[in-house]
Every structure is written in C-alpha cells, then in structure tokens.
Image (cartoon, rainbow, N blue to C red; front, side, top):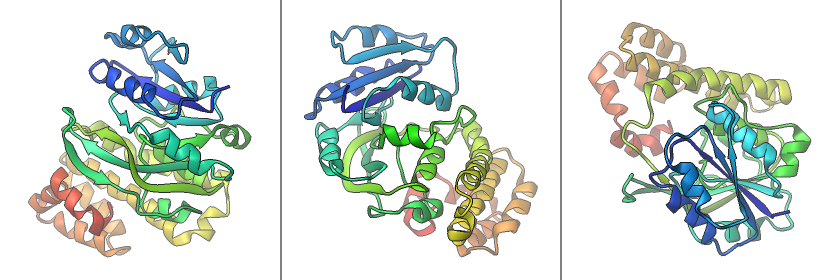
Length: 310
C-alpha cells in the first residue's frame, strides 16, 4: 500500500498534463501512486497517461461526465494510500513537495496539511507567491474568517476521512475545497507550512460568472452541513461563523453585478453593510458602479486582498 495516493482529476487536460505527471514522477519522495480520474475527456489525455510505462499510475475513466466534486469523490474512493494528495492536470509540484510534507507529518495527529503556491500564467510565467497566513493548529476560526487552502498542496489523512465519513460532495461544483477542508478543520488540527511547494496556473477569466453564481449557494450548503455535523460550531465560533455567512451574501452581490442587476446587488449589500467596514465600503461603491468594477478588477483585487481580505 503506497504512503501517498495522488488524485489527478482531468477533463480535456492535454495541454499541461505531461508537465503535471512529470512533477509527481520527479518527486524525491517515491512511495506514491497516481489515481488518474478521467472525467470523459475527448482529447488526448488518456493516450498521454497510458504512454507512461509506470505501474504506479492507475488510470480510471468515469462512466459518465460528473461534477468536479463527484469526480474527486470517486477518485478518493479508489485510493489506497495512507495520505491523499491532489494535483490537477494543469498544476505542478516542486520536486521536494511530498518529502517536505511527509517528513513534517511523521508521528503527528494532523488531519491535513497545506503549504504555499506560486501563481503562474498559462505559459508558466510567475505572477505572485501566495504564502499561508496561518500557523499550525486549530484553524477552523481562521478558515471561517478567511479561507486560504489551495488545491495544489493539501494532503489528507485517508483513515480520518473514512472514520469521519467525510468526502467531496457531488452537488458542490465550484467550491469543493472550501466544503471539505472547513469540515475537516472542525474535527482536527492542521499543519501549515509557509513555503512554496507547487505552482497554480491562473487563466484570464477563470472565475466565470457561472462559478460566481454557485459560490453563495455552496457557501450556505457548506455552513448548514457544518452545523449538522458539529452543532456547537455556530456558538463556539459565533463571530467567524457570521463572517462566513456574510461572505456568502457578498458573493451573491458579485454575481448580481456580473449579471447587470445593480438594484438587487444594492439590496444584498445593504444587508451586510453594517456588519463590517469592508462591506460598508463595497456597499458605497455600488453607487459608483465604475468604482465597484475597479475594485473587482483581478489585478486591483490582488493588491487589496491583504487589506479587505476578500
């Protein structure tokens, strides 16, 4: 049984697939398997994977096209490793990624770990380094206030998923990482490593209107699920839970503005404008829609992120 099962979910990912697979094969830590879950690709993804003469790369083809949440769930269900890691077909790991994490996790009771990433363009040009703000331990309050877990570096203890009956949810299509890592953080401690262990490709327009439309819905689904699974959370972390709820309203307003519904966006932001200065500022910007759009320009958002934490 391998130490680490690397889940690679793919749908028509031929463009960068070899680079992603090679970044696993090049790991200094060698006790791994790749669970390659092909979600009905119609390009050459299957041929690329099958061209590797490596028994540790296990190819699965989904019988039908599914949401990413369901595809990740299905891949996790066939994994055999003690730890489960994730690498999508367009991302890359640093050669020491698994060695750094497995060494740090040895003999601990952390339920999952994550580290920093380098955001890159489609051509591999560096954009910015994203280093975790938080320190290891009980991270639930922090993650409710501001979620920061990426999908390039996490490793999850597989037995803990089984024992707690936690997995990716099929109905979650745009924020599956938020759902699973918040629920895990409610049950155990997290290892945070403040070093870059992988690269994440950022595409122009990757935050589509369709995804934005799902963020608010899925935020509420996750928070309701969290209450059902750990009823004490809402009272124990009242302020952070409230912030998580307010963030859902903000995402709804962003979607409405993307759809051109200024009136309803104002109504939504009015609900949360009194809860925090940053939402009051955003509410005010709706009366100058050009300012709202400027604040949500990708480059401007990156500069303001450390201040507004949105």
